[in-house]
Image (cartoon, rainbow, N blue to C red; front, side):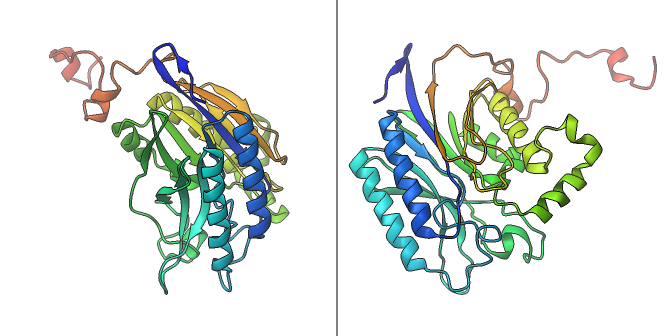
Amino acid sequence: MAGLYADGVELTVATCQFPVGADIGRNARYVMDQMRSARAGRADVAHFPEACLSGYAGSDLGSFAGYDWAALKGQTERIVELAGELGLWVVLGSAHPLSAPHKPHNSLYIISAAGAVIDRYDKRFCSGGPGGGTGDLAHYSPGDHFSVFEICGVRCGTLICYDYRFPELYRAYKSAGVQVMFHSFHAAHVDGEHLAEMRAAVGLQWQKLNPGGTYPGITMPATMTAAAAGNYMWVSCPNSSARYSCWPSFFVRADGVTTGRLRRHRAGVLISRVGTDEDLYDSTVAWRERAMAGQLHSGELVRDPRSEVRTEL
């Protein structure tokens, strides 16, 4: 299942997308079908979008009022069992209920190939204003921890959607030795009115210069490219394919090169391979650790009056 790149480890990743909705059973069928497809493609891990099993509150469902938590638990258990049967790791987006009156977490369950939940990442930066009544914060409680684990000897981490706006998270994971990031998104199921509002906010005159046309379509893929190249980290980026989806799922190599992309608005599984000893371009390798330690320059500083006086030509 896992091969070798030179003297390094190879990890095969299945980045999965389907039209996530409010129907837990339908979502679960997609997840399990794509798990089987991932295993048939010799993947070591199947990675799914944000809230792909539970549905995404505020988009796929209005709220968690009257939500069938028992059904969600039952389908999650089926997926965990199937992971063990297939010998497949799974990174699964879902909601995780808390004790009343607390709102649930927006989570990723990390399920091992032995069929066990070994950790859970809870979205740390939920969108919305400080009052907590808008965006994700209207429906979810933020998390407080990182999730770091190993698959086939490769050190992995997890993030969810709006976390992408906070590069501090990538730097912290890099400090922990993470080589592959499983960053799940849900930038889909956008209705026509909201889509028009986003495009207008971007500026209709700038649409040709900004493929994607919406803030998620412009900034999310670009930030993932920068995160991969700046941190020398492979990044798997699944998104829901429910119309309107702002962009299709893709995979970025550690040098910032996109190596695969699915088709927007179509369910699919993208197979990508990580070779930790591949000879990839990394222009920041000599200085990254110094920068992370707070030494924010390359080379050696000099003492020179011509340098120190900054108001003279």
